[in-house]
Amino acid sequence: MTTAATTEHGFDGIRACVFDAYGTLLDVNSAARRCEDALGGGWETLAATWRAKQLEYTWLRSLMGDYADFERVTGDALDYALERHGVIGEGLRDRLMALYRQLDAYGDAAACLGTLRGRGLNTAILSNGSPAMLDAAVAGAGLAPHLDAVLSVDPLRVYKPHPSVYQLACDRFGVMPEAILFVSANGWDAGGAARFGFRVAWLNRAGFPAERLPAAPAAVVDSLSAIPDLLPA
Image (cartoon, rainbow, N blue to C red; front, top):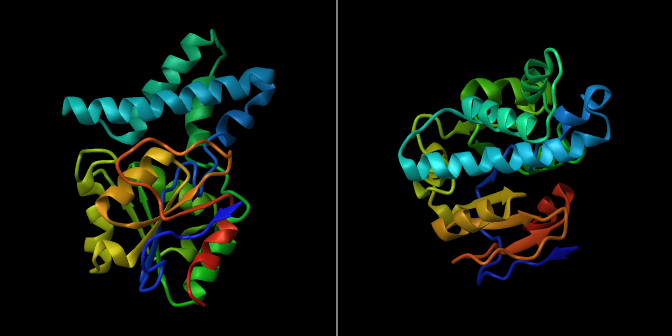
C-alpha cells in the first residue's frame, strides 16, 4: 500500500530525509518481546500500555511546562504499565529499561537509509529520545553509519509535535522545511510535521485510519522500502 504524493510539487527538491526513531526505525515492542520468558503472552499488552503512556506523558509534560527527559518519561510509563497489569518480577524493570536502549531496528531500516545516502541525500533522526538513549539505540541497531545527524528534543525541553522541534532539522541542514522529507510511523507526528511545513510520508504499517488533524502527510506507505521510490531517481 503506497499512496502517492499529493502536494503540488511532489517530492522534488528534497535535500534531507529525516526520520522519527521510536516506532519508525526502531521497534518499540522489541524490549518487552525479549522478556517473553518473564512476561509470557502478556508482553504485547504490557508493551502497548507502556508505549501509550510514554507518548501521553510527553504531551502532558509539554503542556504543563514541566519537562523531564525521555528516559525519565519512559521509566515512569513503564512503572505505570507494570502496576496496571500486575506484573512483578525481580529485576524486570531494570531489564526492560536496559533493553529499551538496545531496541531492534526494523528489517527495512538500514537498507532505506543506505539507499537515500547513496543518492547523495542527507539523512537524520529527529526524536523525542534523550541523547544518551539515542546514541545507544542507534549504535546497537547498527544504524549509525547510515546517518548524518541524530537530533534530540532535549536542548529545547519540549516534545513533539511542538514546531520548535521540527525547526531543529532545518537548522541542522540549513534548508527550508519544504526541502525536508520527514518520515514517521506516528500519525500525530506526521500531522505535526506536515503542519510545520515538511513534506511528510506517514509510515502506516498497521493500516490505521488517517488522523483528524489540521495537516495531512503528502504520502502514505506501509514500509520503509517504499520511501526511496517517492523521490526522483
